[in-house]
Image (cartoon, rainbow, N blue to C red; front, side, top):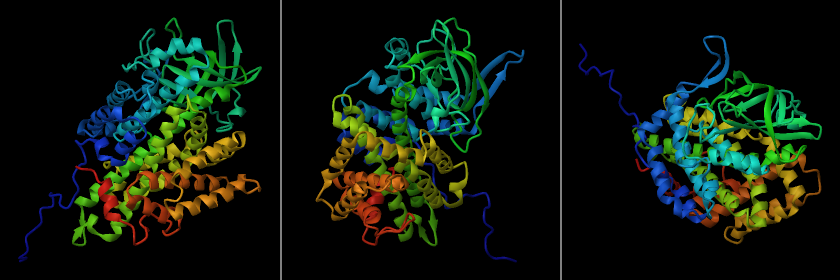
Length: 545
């Protein structure tokens, strides 16, 4: 007969505890510091309020539910009438309502004081921590406003609705609020939007568009920006979901895309059967018109990736502080500490870059140098930060082991979301080539970018050496296209290094420069040099809960 006791097989031992009911903004010290530093300290209180909501058990559960119960397409009603509607789980509408109530879709347009884009960036990242998918229509609604201003009459009609702080998902005429989407790509062209074949023809009271769109995100939006060909060339149109008399514009939803992630948000393939649209900007200048929208959505790709990195770091550190293996907590083991610190460095570098970029958006309207920095740095940051997102999420999942790979834990969702943000609004090659194009069209932008980097000149020899190498790369007369990714990566690391050297604690800045600029680190996370102050870095990034 066995003398040892029989274990209770129903007991869960040595498991972590939920990270919930905490202020996600307060826990993110690099973000809170950047809010003050970049000129939006006046938004501190509202960021804390939203942080407490985003970190609440109720809203975190809403994020899980919005992904577990995916949108469903209803092409016809029970009587056989074509309705083209998408049904969402109530949790999705709960998140959308929170975002609109807290002005994530419109803060800089409603309250254009200095620091408004910085404040909005911090708020957007804070709520994205609960669930990132709903951020797509919020981002497009935020981004459509500057594009619409190319058509003052349209802007006057739509901007009050697009900036309203009440969320109303019902499709009905005369409602006071609106959400925006866009449809640019087609199946034969993808990122090459000039290959579009959708046609727009004048009909007396506007234009009629006929064609298809391979990707239309958030198809239940009230207004879409759409590209179509006219006699003058590719042009931009504002297409409402409902016509003024309340009838449906003949937008046909063919199917919802079965995506790797971003499950809370519906993305669709649509056909346009003579839909009504209004011209935005000049005929033949569609790309130039819609690029204002694209610039702001690219900023949000950076913000969304950065928010995902922060979630990954918090979850990994939290888990390691509660889970034991081989006789001690994971967080006490040197190799795990090296991984956690490395992940935290990447997150902080992204945060500093995202918030500095948001300040350029604040200053661009009144400062030509800020406008140049905004144009170039947006593409540089979009390429590098979004490119780093998937690998960062994968490493954080490993910190949780098998638990991290299950859908019950939040990192699986983060991992599935991060590739989208690298692909949406231009995947790697598209963005790298866009950086080259921006530098060729506005050479002064390169000087402005380097001037920003040089604000840290003399503070760290490794950064100074990297900047010298970057200058040689930029001056190389050989065709830059084969080197585009190499150039953009070097630019991004120079900017991040400069920001961290100027603003981060010495332990963070030193470890970044050693591992990212001087080559004193490996290719995988967790290969920091032995001199790195990992304990101080982890403590800075640990959630309080």
